Length: 251
Image 1 (cartoon, one colour):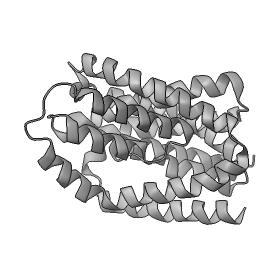
Image 2 (cartoon, one colour):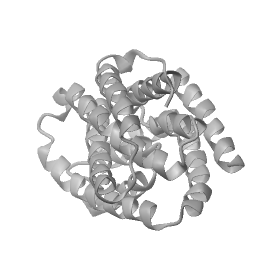
Image 3 (spheres, rainbow, N blue to C red):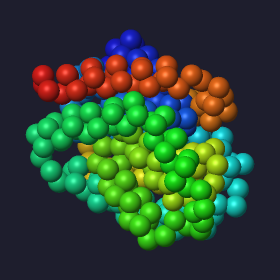
Image 4 (tube, rainbow, N blue to C red):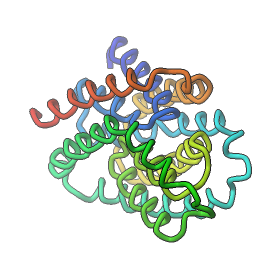
């Protein structure tokens, strides 16, 4: 790893931590950066997942006021996220790398569509959630579990999936929903990270650089991200994601 590559990975981790705290889809920054630098896709995904865990913790700390009193929901929904992450992580490690290279461009494309339509989704879920109460019921639990499978396998845009689902089924304001989203995404990342640490190949230098950057970005994103222009974040994510799709299809 050259000094310039290290700087690029650290910068990508910082951007990803901030974006995950505010929007979700931070992996669309770090993962394509690693692929562009020549890291094999599965190794890049595993190392990226582990590296982003500290950023998730930092963003949850930044949203601690919104998460106050949410312990019951987090335990209930977190169990679904944990189970889904284990399944998704095992799928990543058991399926051949060629399958990952075919599947991930499709997942990125879907994630980019979600990024682009997020404002419409947020408006729609705002109308739908009126009158909803409680923990969201068994359907939300199942959907959160499926989002965990997606997050354990790849993870880009799992935050957008989660905030859309939570917004539909829970009656809370969007800032509280965003805090819960950060916590559940953190459960997915941490669960998959433990699994990957035990049985997968990991580039710990990459993990360390992403972790340091994501911690800074996660806390900063939670603190000031509400004032960032969402259109600029979405445009940047889409551009980088398109580069990743081209790189994967070409490789």
